[in-house]
Length: 151
Image 1: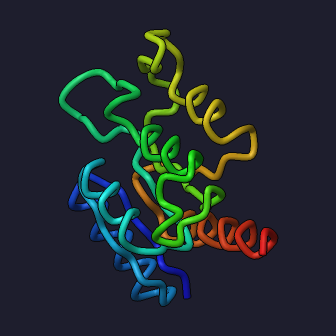
Image 2 (image 1 turned 90 degrees about the vertical axis):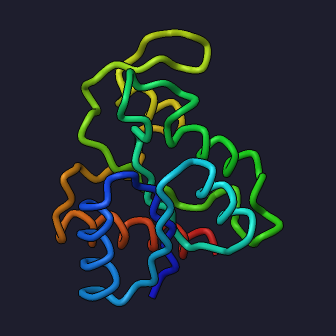
């Protein structure tokens, strides 16, 4: 059983993830609907995996500052180590917008898929939205294997 942090701002998606990961696969899921809530929970609790919605601000264009990339950058810098969250915490990117463009932190316009590659490399774990049970299960299993390989 994994402790999973879910950063997702669409309630219907949250219900699907919780049903699949908790009920069907026995994991514990902590849900956060904002970057701020995600930051707060990562500072106070330990997680095995984070599943992050790339696009958190649905009211406008995708920007680095309002995306999951901000949280990933903080994880990789070690901002959450006091709570037991490793710099290498496995992160699963959840998105249905890989082909869309976004504004990167330096102002450059890039595809979302390029942002994922820049932050997590070519072996990034991604799951497409809307979520499907088998895709979520496979992404979590991949993340768990990576976590175990580091121990």
